[in-house]
Image 1 (cartoon, rainbow, N blue to C red):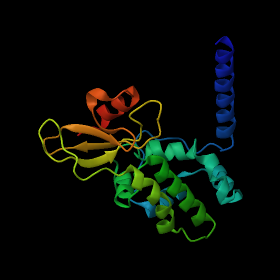
Image 2: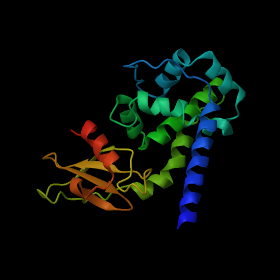
Image 3: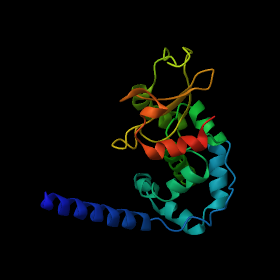
Length: 213
């Protein structure tokens, strides 16, 4: 058991170092404003990135191949997700939801891919990008017949909260659903329907408190 503990500490340390090295691959983005402008749609995202990103980031993206964009996930991608309200119900996340894109990681992936293609005078191919996620989302859809156990009313998806119901599956898509009487429920394809008292992930509950209707 002691050996396993040493192994775990070593792996955690190695992962931490790897992430720090990875994040250092992407130069400083911008000075983050307290209340940044949130784009309306993908076209507006490209316009705002043109206005916002430093020359250093611009040059880095110009030097990268499209396959290198994964390096930006933990810095520029994180900035986009956090400051453009992709974890909540911003107008941009609502726009992506209307296109069928539910998870903030997928939203920022599309934004970064589209911006790279825009910089390199390549077709953005939004429909093809969205189609990549269709099979995945089929597994994450919820039945139309879900009923609120408190009042018997039908439940309707409102938004994806961006965290898993179980801490062991942090990246799993979790949908927040409400009935007409505003009783909240959570749904994932792995766990099914949960009420708020059954959720184990404290981080999810904290995020829900800040975004609930």
